[in-house]
Image (cartoon, rainbow, N blue to C red; front, side, top):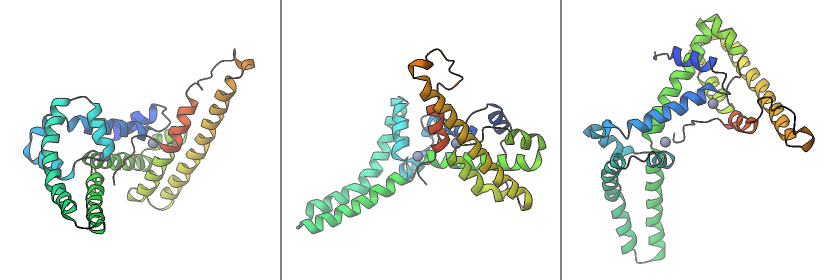
Length: 241
Ligand SMILES: [Zn+2]
Ligand SMILES: [Zn+2]
């Protein structure tokens, strides 16, 4: 399937010198989606139907609440809760009418299953997944088509572990043969080199707190602990898939 490539944000991301520019782009994608579902879109009946049916995962519902747009979210929740009540009340009635603990627990199982399914679907995660695919395929396509990009990527700080895996998984959609192999080897080399660099920075940071090193420069290692966490686990991850 042909997708729309995102050459400009990917090139800008690579030039930014971030520990993982896919993380950065995904943080933006997440924010875009959250703002979308608190904006004029919620007045469109079809979108409200979609929200009522699918909704958001717990993390993104909380993120929507944290945006403090009470007017929008209260509107969304009004109909979302109507739908939830329609699904949940019959199960609660079943529990109320059960004449034994065994039957009550059975009905609770149904409620749990419903709740798990309801928490799984997420329109924000879906949007992020669509953007992620575009970004990681653009990285592979630029690697294939643009020698300058290939050079810059091989000199870069690479990606977090989480997005390295995503890039490797999608690589064959854009690359094949020797180029595919070279790309997969490059991704692994970048991860190794940059895990090493992050750890060296982290060691420097830990030593900096010793009294005898008080006057030494920070050498840009002030945030090495945060960069290590980011390199290992990434940010802007899709939670509900
Ligand atoms: Zn990442
Ligand atoms: Zn989500």
